Length: 249
Image (cartoon, rainbow, N blue to C red; front, top):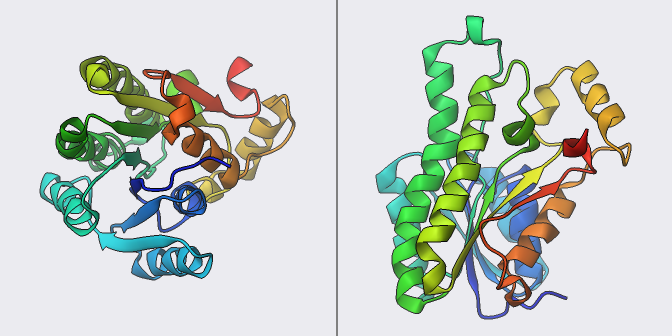
């Protein structure tokens, strides 16, 4: 049992997939959790009802965190409601896959804005209450694609690789304030984002994974919970690959 009682967490993009699993697990461990969505109100409400039914605490806040004003509102709403912010999980993400020669500038910009700019906006806003309290846990959800690259995903790979550099830089900036900043790089996990990948690509990934299977969203979520815990207080600036060994190949 990871004890997160008394902590308040925001999980961006948590109406489905990895984000929803993270929200549920953090709530199970005792944290009050903000479920954030851009346009999936029904999904976010479903996650909230699961948390409440299990005896946890949470609320839904709509915000397009790729926009600075929305990200600031998300943080302010959380602090105003619960008086503090202890854990920020930058999970919001999207894909627009195609080969670089066919990629439209809009597809490049959308992925960078959603995956990377959102982490910038939310982290910048979250650091003020965390620095005031002299405590914080920031966990960025990157990807093995950000470590190894992937044909047809240059925009996604760039955003996720950028998130790794962002993680390490912010960790150095705020470590003296007892704020840790880490990243988790999931391997192939069944979500709405991976469902659109060609079956041959998914099968190739399974074959290249030493454990010989896809991951589960809960396996990513428990890694997040650990990095958010007191037990992980001496870990910062790190990238934890939760990928069944794929990144070794």
